Length: 408
Image (cartoon, rainbow, N blue to C red; front, side):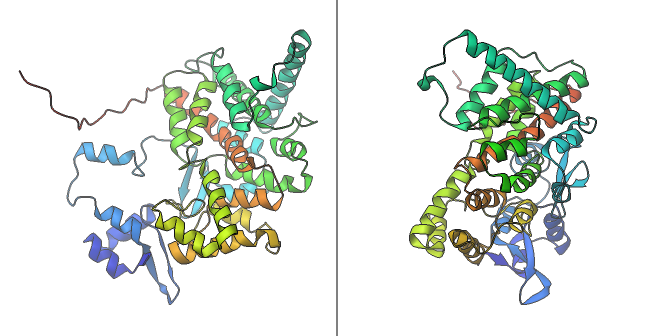
């Protein structure tokens, strides 16, 4: 059984009901209503077993610190975003509600504490300046060999950020207004690099530029919403990497490069690639057998479940409600979602929603990753600006577990 009753959970945990409910409210144990009795709740077995492994009584400070690095208590204070009561909040405002009308640039204004419209104007100016510089460089030098140009959006993004790291100034001690302008320039750099084809209009929003570059004008509103929903998500792995780099005084570009490389892992932004494998298996063998085989391999089910949202990822729900339900080519996706809930008790997360969005509008294969990276870049930069203000090195200690020192 994937779900446990309260009595079963309390028996395993050996705690009072109040402790169980507190862990649910803090997002450490997923819960859902019992279909047979809506007055009762069911609790996710994996979370219960994980909590049961923790020793009873007062934990030593070393244990507390170690657990804080692995889905534990927050390790850094931040005023930017939080997941609370099944919602994602940007500076106290519901991200799903914001996605109904806001652009990614509007969210950057909010998170970076810029004036309304400032980020859009700054990114447009940066894009025009880059285009002018590139035109001059092309006129002055022969075109690079095809083998020297990155073959993917990932490679192009990595290269563009790395080149900036070699020349951009350190972030420490600089005025906030100057850093916000540079943040807009870094966002513009990554956007231009990751587009497979440049948009004809660089003086507009990133969602519009993507729709033009991908020749999918009908998808522009969904692209806008997806970028807004991806803008920030607490202190995730890539954001933490960004803040660690910035805490040393590194440039904004260096901090974003740290976050960008972390995003490539299959347990983070790279989950869409593993989800593609699962979908291919569902196409070939059927959704239910595909899910069963994947779970049997002991791997986490990509595209489903999120530890911060017991009732399902609100970002995914906001997008899925707007995607077509009757397209035959999408039936496998919905069959897969049904099988994942039936066999694992997991609901679609944002990785699934981005992949379905790409399939529904026939976007490029790497569109989910591009949307994730460009949206999250705004959050990385917000955390970078916040970390510069903190002016404190992030330097955890290691709890040594190796062999003892040799004695003579």
